[in-house]
Image (cartoon, rainbow, N blue to C red; front, side, top):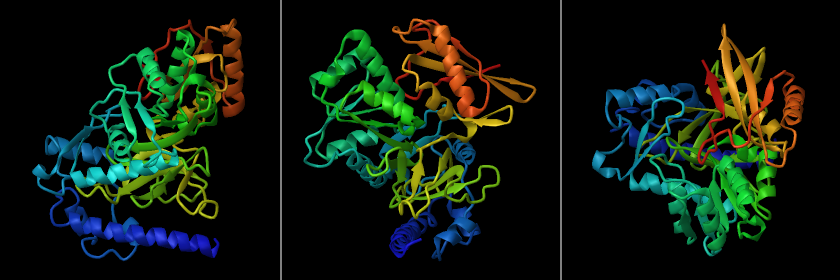
Amino acid sequence: MSESIETTRAAIEADQLDRLGRLLAELVPSNAFYAPVLRSAELAGKVESLDVFRASMPLTTKQRVVDDQLAHPPFGSNLTYPLNRYTRFNQTSGTTGTPMRWLDTPESWGWMLGNWAQVFKAAGVEAGTGDRVYFAFSFGPFLGFWTAYESAAQLGAMCIPGGGLSSVARLRAVIDNRATVLCCTPTYALRLTEVARDEGFDLSASAVRAIIVAGEPGGSVPTVRQRIEAGWPGARVVDHHGMTEVGPVSYEPKDAPGTLRIIESSYLAEVIDPQTTEPVAPGNVGELVLTTLGRLGSPLLRYRTGDLVKAIPFDVHPQLTLEGGILGRVDNMVLVRGVNVYPAAIDRVVRNFDEVAEYRVEVRHDRQMAELNVQVEPTSSCDDGEALATRVAQALNESLNLRVPVAAVAPQSLPRFEMKAKRWVVIE
């Protein structure tokens, strides 16, 4: 590692250690969830180094947070301040288990708005740019784009909400209001192109120059990105990821497309082996673990996110950068005849076929063994669905070294999604 890279890393880690020290000092006196753990781990005083923190502090699991909220309803004991300090309520989607409630103080909320400002900067949205940002989703209790909306407003952008509207109405609003930035999931960006084609909208006439996507791995999957950008001429896809319980975590840097860069001034990140919990060297796939350095009101320390990532070596990028973004989820990996299969791997192959309008993966378990079946829905322009299914099956075999049955289904027969797509279905 060169001296300049070592200097950069040393500066980043010194800043993180300083922020970590301030966080722990705030938690020890009053946070009932973490104070006993910190005292037991001998982290109640000054922390000597990040390595000492990682070695001494136990990992926090989602189940522990859920159990704590069940034991101390409704918000749990992970609150650093009196309840009257908290002004924001959010809740996880609950797609992988019991929903978690999350409260924030104005200070913690402001910290998240600052993180989103970095995401916007990566998309070219800054104070004075005069951007108009369209939020193509319904505002629910999940953190979603609430922080994005307020952060964009702070930057001086015009914020256009799209909650409660049909896809046709949203397309009309994007075009008529000359929106320059679109925020949605990768799936919904593709869905809007499908609706535009069916309804006769000319997306080349839109003013959209950036599409910020989140909620699914697709934003960093080359075939998905290419398909979105082909449907939205002149627009650049900018990937981002975050979670309700940790906040906005990363953004796609312009100098490294197809990656995600952790906001290291706000997060202490680690990559561990999901089975052994030992550190994983850059270049290898592991589970992302995060410590929220600025969410003092409701923090998470060494939180197992369940996200699978691959860190790029620091001699390539001095900042922590993830190759291919979020590769999948630990709990979504399926072992099929000795091959680890992740949803993003299927997505990467299927999205190579422009004739596939939508698809679904059925997972069946037989005697502890899993089998996959893929259904593809041809576009209206495809005149031979069975031939398409055969070509998709061949591509999956070549990519995964695994035979996966693929069948064509009738047009418009598979569900469409506004938020996180649920394409993987477990068949009992």
